[in-house]
Length: 219
Image (cartoon, rainbow, N blue to C red; front, top):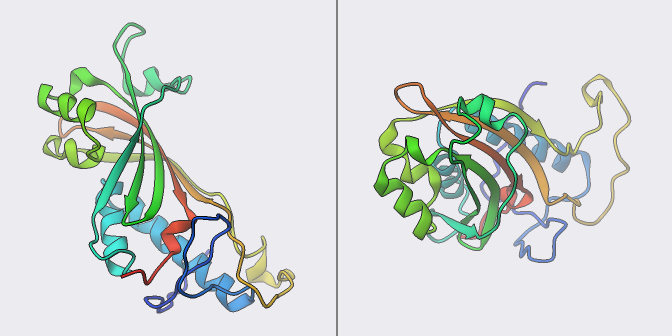
C-alpha cells in the first residue's frame, strides 16, 4: 500500500480514551481517514529505518509540536511478565542465564506515545548500564547507546486501519459522520531484537504505539 504525504503539522486528534485533550479533531470522513493512515505509515517507516525507537519518537514529537520540549521520558512500571516462549532462543542464551524484564511508558510531555515490554540480558550490558536501568526511569535506548546497537525487526503490525481492506480498489468506505474519528488506544506494534556492535543479541522488545502519536499541536 503506497504512502500518501499530507501536511499535518496543525492537525490534532481526539482519541477514544478519556485522557486525550485535543485542540482540533480528525473528523469521521474519508479525507481524515486517509490522512491518519498516511501518518501511521510514515511513523511506521521511521521506526523501521532507525535503531532507537526512543530517538525516533523524540524527533516525531518535536516535528509535530506535541510538547513544549521534545523529550522522551520513560515511566517505568514495576511489574513482571514471563518472556515469550522463544525469547531465550532468539537471544542465544541458556535456560539458566539471568534475563531481566523492564516495562515502560514512553511519554513526550503529557502524551504516552508507546508502551514497551523489554526482556534483556544483563551480562551483555556494562555494570553502569545495569545500575541505571535498575534505579532510574531512563529510556532503555538511551542507556545502551554506547553499545552502538542495531535493531532487527521481527514484526511490524498495524493494529487498526482507518480504511477498510481493499479501499484502494474501490471497497465501500465507512459511513461519514459529523463527530471526531474514533481511534483505538493501540494502533501499531513492533517486535524486535537489539544487537550490540559486535553482533550479539541482548534485548527482545515488544513496543505498542498508542493513538497519542497523532495528538499534534500541543506546543
